[in-house]
Image (cartoon, rainbow, N blue to C red; front, side, top):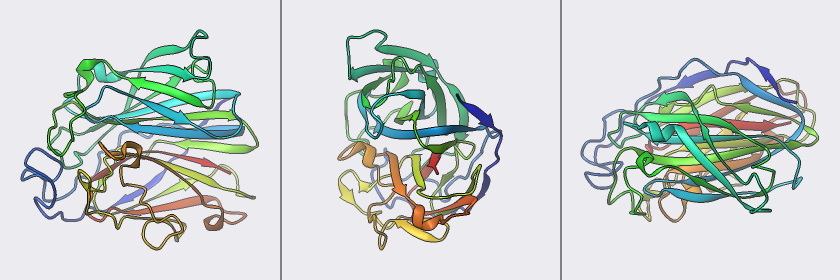
Length: 319
């Protein structure tokens, strides 16, 4: 059973100057039209945080710039018994009506057992600032999917109508780009389990290029293992396959959990959901138990984007 609680996320964002033209070509993310400052917000009216008692979760994501479809692998424990499934997707505008619709097809397991496919209409939950592509903003959508289609762990094909993306030729985004420009899509699959799982998306739509911090308030104090996943748009290693922005870091409650010097040296904003190309979307996860000892009531998340323009989408916490 799903419970909805209206929990507000405390947000604090700082924009920092960008070096104009530091990366890419005139048609790409850091071309000559790049803004001098990263744009922060706006953040729309916060949506409710969704709370799932006696649950576990798995996430997966894909980058979709210049492609019309890709499959998402959802892997974790348990293998079956999903109680809810949420899709998030992000598009740089101007958008079209087709961007509101997402199609999900189960490729594994049981790919021929009906129902195996669904098309749903998404809710626009935020419009973030342009992450340095010259767009009209980063449009973030959300939809709940039937658990008869998203049954748990598996391989799910995510697709959009051709009109939803300016290009579907698979081109390198740093060479060719057109609007609407798909960023990517993520699945959050909730399952029967032993944790309290919280899904936060009231912080969706913050576009930043330097430091950003926000606080995720937990429903109950922590007592043991704490897991945290971050979903975000427009992360990258650099220009195409040339790494130039690799110093991005993540801390939780003051503990460094990702980036140089952390146990996980990869950034949470390196476009890994689309490696090697097109990059530009991230779904990352960490065991943050050490940063949230017993009795903790919040996760204070802090990012340092090191000049890369990126946009927040959602966080998932299991405690």
